[in-house]
Amino acid sequence: MLESAVLRFADPHQYQEAVQAADVRVTVTAPGRFDATLTRIKLDRLWMQRARFSLPSVTHSAVSKDRSTIFLQFQPDQAPILHSGAEVTPREIVCYPLGSDHHYRASASYHCGGMSLTPGDLAGFGAMFAERDVRSPASIRVLRPALPLVSRLLDLHKAAADLATTAPDILEHPQVAKSLEQALVRAMVACLTDPDADGRPHSIRLRLAVMQRFEQMLEAHQDVPLHVTDVCAGIGVSERTLRLHCHEKLGMSPHRYLWLRRMNLVQRALTHAEPTDKTVTAIANDYGFAELGRFAVSYRKLFGESPSATLRRPP
Image (cartoon, rainbow, N blue to C red):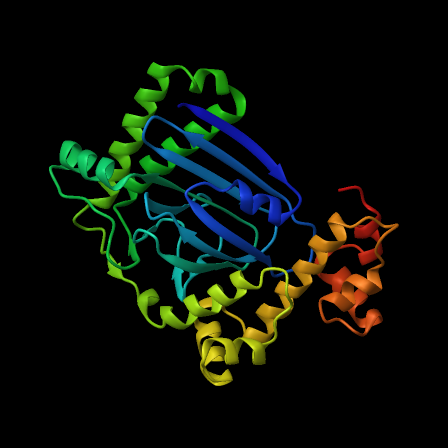
């Protein structure tokens, strides 16, 4: 079924629920008000999306086991994204194994997205357009196709998103959608099969097991504040080991990451609470913040408003 949507979010938790072909969790890492735009398009076989974020963040993403997915960046001058420990530039493409999970960190506002096909469709289009056996990689790979090839793919991706924004009814026309899908898939296959793409089996594969257990523990305690000692005991590693892994994959210490997570949990709780039922103090205490004055200062620096203003603001 052909469909498209352009969605705007002021809450990272609502954004997370709208992403297709992956389960994501976004942790904002810098001060300011969160603002994200997500453009989703489903063609006959190809799914695609692009997101624009106003703030730096760390994203944990677990991609679908049923769809072969690639990751793209859309602003040529944006800062490279730290993708599970390796810098990925806007002209590079990240290819994911089926069902894999990973982190990526952006140090500034950014514009990224992706495309996905079922493994069968990817193989079929690979044989059709390149006479090659194209499959999802066994480990995360970063490709750097020839500039004309990746530019063609990014231009087509933008054209589809522009149609979804300005003329979604045209995008729903079966013949228009089919022509666009064919062009997009052909450009995607050309990038994936470029013999000079220099696919580097990413150092991303190293130390993934510890970070997977780390994220599994966070997932199992979604609304519970966790501290480094809790995590180390839960996943069976030393603090030093966890610190080394987090610096490599997240670009920050586990203390900082877990503190940001708790601050994001507080913001979500304040956003959805009724001011007549809950107080800022009670919610802050629920997430382990005992010194209300210090908490309020940190909250304002991170989110651009006081916690009481968030509590009073209508959901």
